[in-house]
Amino acid sequence: MNLRWMRQNKRVLNLPWKPSVRRADKSNAIDVMVSGVLGSEISQEHWSNYFTESVNPISTEERKEWLSKLNNVVVSSDAFFPFRDSIDCAKQFGVKYVASPGGSARDEDIVEACDEYGMTLIHTGLRLFHH
Image (cartoon, rainbow, N blue to C red; front, side, top):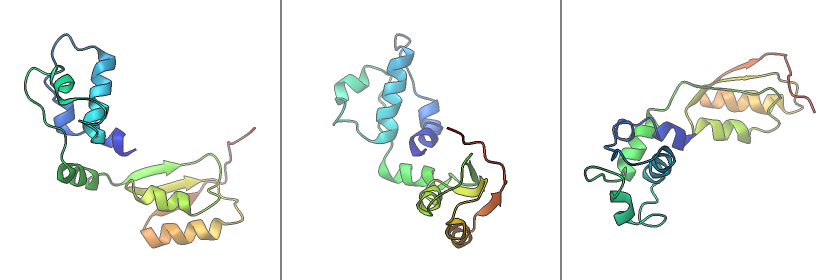
């Protein structure tokens, strides 16, 4: 989720691509930029070949600031959440609203986690998860 949100950063959306750069190469270069692996997974020289001007990777500070803007996210599930760790994880990604069918033996743990994080939880009573 973080990488998907990072792709919406203004710097990423306005990259000065060379006309010859193919879509797959753009996608890979964006992954490098947002994941912070420039230098370890791709050389600076290779990186610079994608652009018409010099482009620096997103700094740790920029990344933290941008990620802090990720909020009011909705998460839903077609099955119940069996453990609160799903909610703990969701909190890291700006989730404020949770929808699930409910029905887990540990629903109370999920309710407590949502309350603890100030999330709105709705049990829909509708389960779509089938094998």
